[in-house]
Image 1 (cartoon, one colour):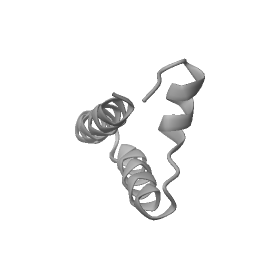
Image 2 (tube, rainbow, N blue to C red):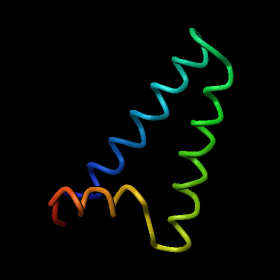
Image 3 (cartoon, helix red, strand yellow):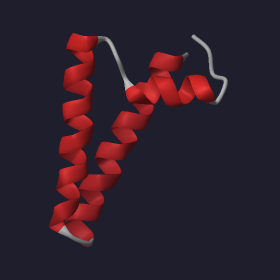
Length: 61
């Protein structure tokens, strides 16, 4: 369950920041890059900030 929420949140953040970059300000692409970098590093370190946040909200695996 937690993996699905993390993937949905990451996908949503990327799509929202792309829309903000198109319609508001191009600098929103930095947020897209941050989300991508976080996903990339979590593949190697097996640590994801979003998982920690979800755990604090009481969502379990």
